[in-house]
Image (tube, rainbow, N blue to C red):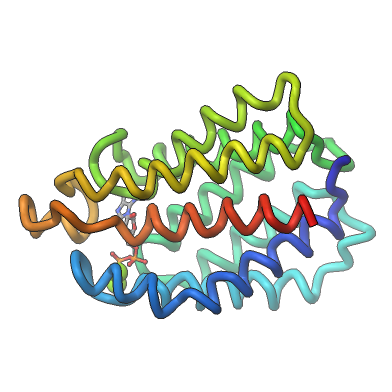
Length: 211
Ligand code: ADP
Ligand code: MG
Ligand code: MG
């Protein structure tokens, strides 16, 4: 199985809906160690992506164009930290599937790895700094490990499990990047909201592909 541009648009719509449904929880997590807007910023971003993709003739475009459209609309809509981080992630995802008509298991692993690297390059956070990197990087590693023998669903399932574990692991971390770094030791014991939304995004992708 592989995803063409229309399938990829459907995946973005599924993620936008999941973020919408869970934005209250994401903002609550951000309220504890940040400024309480993460659910709102992600919701604004994905609604803008959804609107922009609505206006795209997906059948006439390659997956790379879908990612580039997502990048531009997310960046234009979101002023918070997540804006440039996800815009870069989507741009890199687009570059990873350049010239491809569809995304198979190996290409999806490349997409997730490119997103993880994009977030890291843009935000300069390393593993263990209590950011979304702590969910994206393990997701990328797991996706790439599964890509050799696995199907698209297997790759996304592996990535989803790793992202969820990664998000949970941020509970034990002291924030040293982003707004919650201001809290220092007081950020201990709380899940990073950006890592939580990453886990939600990857889980939604996995679920959408398996169904
Ligand atoms: P803001 O902090 O501007 O209100 P959001 O609330 O939308 O932005 O996003 C906060 C999330 O962004 C954090 O939980 C963290 O995961 C992520 N984040 C912040 N700074 C960085 C960074 N430098 N690298 C990676 N992720 C980061
Ligand atoms: Mg915030
Ligand atoms: Mg904010």
